[in-house]
Amino acid sequence: MSKRQQSIKVQLTEKEVHGQTIQQVFIAKNLIGEITPTDKEFATHLIGGGDFTAKSLDDAVEWLLQEYNLHQ
Image 1: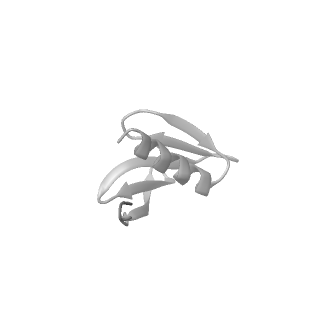
Image 2: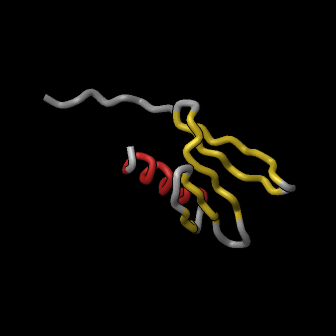
């Protein structure tokens, strides 16, 4: 028997910190990470450990979700 797929709400919000806009990624009201745009890349920080540099916002969000699911 296969398991039924559950939908999970992922939310991106913007926050202003020291004059710089950062993206916060939430899963079901839990903050899992933050994405800070740099010159040509996106610095990504996973809450609970782990940093990554991505070339696009989509790659940064994808990495956060993968790492979050890996450590759950």
